[in-house]
Amino acid sequence: MNFESEISLLIKSKYSLVLVDTIDEDFVARQLFSVAAGMGLCVYCWSLTKGLRVGKNENSFYKTGSPANMLKVVNDLVGDKAPALFIFSDFHKFLQDAVVARLFKDILAMINNTSTTIVIIGADQPLPPDIEPCAARITGGYPDEKEIMAEINRTVAEFRRSSLKLNIALEPEDVRRMVKSLKGLSIQQIRNVLNTAILKDGTLDKKDLTVVEKYKKGLFDREGVLEYFGAEQPANIAGFSNLKKWVCERKTAFFADDSPLPPPKGLLLLGVQGCGKSLAAKMIAGELGIPLYRLDLNRLYSKYIGETEENLRKALKTIERLAPVCLWIDEIEKIFASSSGEMDGGVSKRVLGSMLTWMQERKDRAFIAATSNDINNLPPELLRKGRFDEIFFTDLPQVLERAEIFRIHILKRNLAPERFDLDLLARGCEGFSGAEIEQAVISALYSASGSNEPISARHILEQLKLTRPLSVIKAEAINYLRDWAKERRILPV
Image (tube, rainbow, N blue to C red; front, side):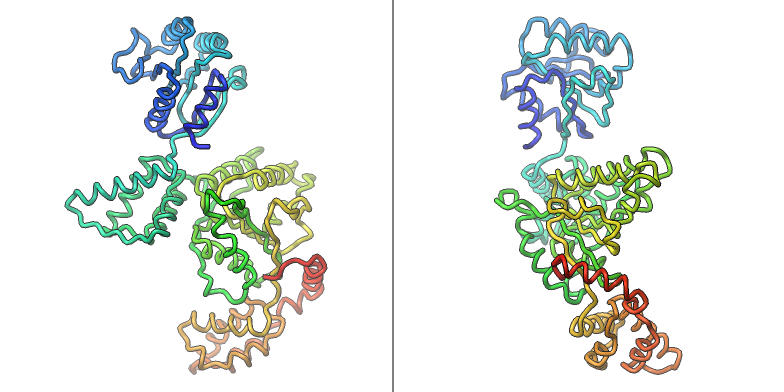
């Protein structure tokens, strides 16, 4: 339901008071005028600087800049029972005054169960406890996709009329992604970021999606709980064929607004340390073509009472406004390590409750990619269907996958893979994780450099022989994890 439909429903439902949380008062006011015209309502507008006015008339009622005086006039206007829509700007700031609060409550009582509605518009609007129950709260001021597309066209047309040469290099898929990425911004914010992207190089292309994503990150995540990451492309990760197929099958439903299928919510990656869970989260963002944000657990938790829960609430709210995004929660078990609440005063228990509710009820286009190394610390309610669409298990790589991992890391160091016997290397590292294979290549580079000779397969094999993999050092724990996944038929990546 868009904003105009939502506010229309509230007015028809005879809500006497509606609070619209917005940073774009002009945009919301235009929408409210449109709704009022469609419903045949007379519109009155008030602000501290302009007083009470009829519609868009610049002339105000006498001495109505004062909130108390304005409410006395409103009291007379609503007395004739004619349906009307009153739009008050920032009025919540004056309700701490006892006289203003009393006058306001009297008016709310008068218009209760009538077709007259008072709408207060502004940002972050706390209300006195005795008025709060009377109010319905909604968010407005953010254009829908049709309006965003119109603003993109307007900006492009404006630049083309200017002396600046503008090059447009957007495919239909890029335009769709651009519109999706601009959702959650006001009209003015959309203009600002588009102007920045175009003026940077005189071009509007798919590279400017990164400009939009970073702009939204800086705008919404002022607490720094969310960390922006680029997307890892599928070609840079070995294996994971089942996971790639699963994501690709759901990609259309993730973006389609009219699909009969619900958009995928996300998945949980369990597995052995160093086997690519974090890299897989980046790959998922790359497959979906959306920005990746990591929830920074170190910044989430605070020593002050109530601040951790507030940090989580703000982070989840930010994710909703940044959507479509991929939210990467690395080592998710650390959030709920003390979910019994005995060690931290119940903080982790409350965080768990908030997180589970959000995961279950959210409607936004945010895909969760959570990773975990320790299943014993995961609460069972997190693992049930509905929180995550699927659970995947990342096991130790097999021979073919190990050969591909060697090829990727050799190429990454600007070396020619054909100079190395990849099959020999892959057979010589049974039980090694991807991270351990990478470190073996790095150590071999140091060894060859120290010997002043070009690196070869021999140097890598020597480093492999010097390494005791985690599957040997922690054999019992890793075997338990692999058996657990096998018994529960967890899907392999």
